[in-house]
Amino acid sequence: MDTVRHGLHSWLLFLLWNKGLSDGSDVTQTDILWGKKDDTATINCSHTKDSTYRQMYWYRQLPGESMKQIVFTTAFSKHEYESGFSVEKFPATKSDALTGSLTVEKLPPEDSGVYFCAVSQHSDTSLTDGSDVTQTPDILWKNKADSATISCSHTKGGSYFQMYWYRQLPGETMKLIVFTRLGNKDHDFGVFSKEKFSATKPDAESGTFTVNNLEPEDKGLYFCAVSEHSDTDTFNS
Image (cartoon, rainbow, N blue to C red; front, side, top):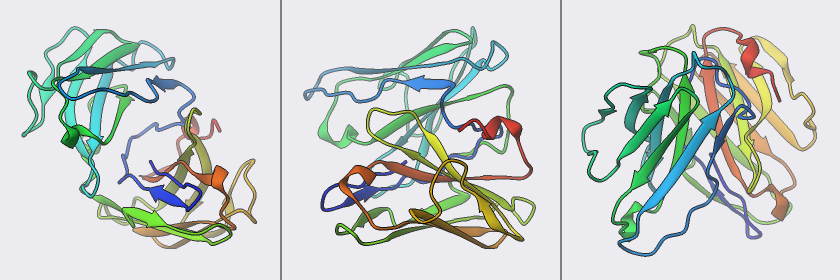
């Protein structure tokens, strides 16, 4: 995800690839949390997909670092923590299929970052910590009326030739801006303006997204996702 301010500041997340990734209207996460040093912060996540989506992944991205998976949870089962993360520091709950939470214990300043959840219907070995998808630049500064371009590339292979670009503005849910695919120059922007936003898809493993004529209200989180085939769940913008 990403940010733009009157200045303008954009903070871009490395992407999460998730089969069935939608525009976010079916997943709700605690928006902003403030805490003092040594406090505890809990983030709640819920979704309305259906009870078969019982698995939940929690991710973190610290400034200047790539996205990392903290823990995989599933209803009524033992949680699986990634290397470098512990249940003592990051306790998680998953009491039912539709909800879950992640807690960060004893907050130090270095815990400041972007945390978010993703849900899945079944185990998917393609759902990774983002190491096979890279989004640049990590931090972007631009002035009002400038254009800002974000590049995205992946190493999943040539069969992943579809790319989606998303935006989340402060206080709003995530929205799909444009769907692009190799060999199709007429990209699907849905309700979004082709004058305000533009995109390229020169090959299967890369693409770009541009926000034109930047305004303060363009500040938000922007990120890409890649897919191997069309998924009708993705077109809920």
